[in-house]
Image 1 (cartoon, rainbow, N blue to C red):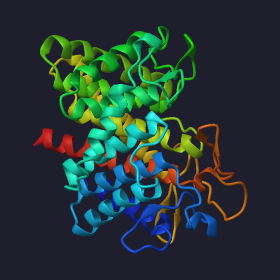
Image 2 (spheres, rainbow, N blue to C red):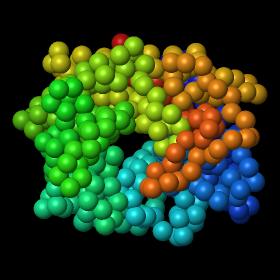
Image 3 (cartoon, helix red, strand yellow):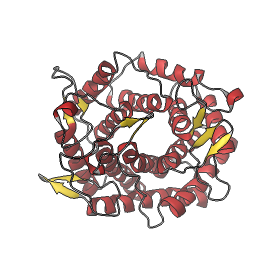
Image 4 (cartoon, rainbow, N blue to C red):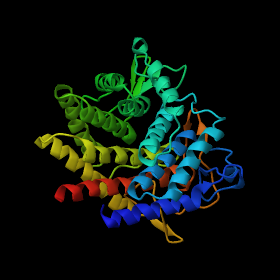
Length: 376
């Protein structure tokens, strides 16, 4: 790995650890991420906790363990997993399939990379996704239970997990095919958000592109030659579309705070997967890998250049191409409304924004590690 990016990832981890990680209700052996910084007393007591943000915190801790294995961090990973279930009323599941997919991805990686296993959790979560598949209703799997909104943010991460876990590759292929047939914009080749009652929800978010890149890359890496070519071609097309429409200056667009704070970081994670995992020796394969790598590194350089520094540690902006704003303890905090978390008055206050920056730095480590390996 390039030592520059290793150092930047390590300081990003230290920033989140110092500002956000706290015991749950003062209980020993527990840990979650406080959802804002600076935090109020209610925040520190985890009156709100945001299930899917905690899943990404776990995923970032696993990234760090992959970069620099440490017994202390493995303990943190174990605490994060244990406390997630505790705060979720001793359950792994909730009513949102996208939330559960993010947790499933993080738990699978925690087991595979960090050796932190929860043997009952993964089968339980996998069954949620398999049993939610309803092509007769227009899906796909829905966004949440008892809902008719079938979207990329649920099907993408659930498909990535099913491609990686057990013998469910065929269902992951079906999910990739459903997205390709249903949600691709014929003009831009970007991924639409979803479909509801047969009508397209035409919003195009960065993380929708990211999860589809992740799913199609996993499928290209895990299927036979004939099928692989179809999935690789979708990766080629979508990487080019992201470059043109989502990162026209080379830097991924921001989506504010709240849930949107995670969007660009997720996209960077799966662009890094394209750069490091997409198989094939064709010119199109090489262009897709190189383009994905370039977007990750250009975004990481910009996010680092525009960061603020507080007590020697980075604080990232909600948009990686402009100065980060220092948050204060006042103003409106992120609120859960209608199934989503909106932004704090200062987006940089939100844990989601800081996790996204950390995720980006880990992605930069990964793509430079492969570059160094190939050169050697």
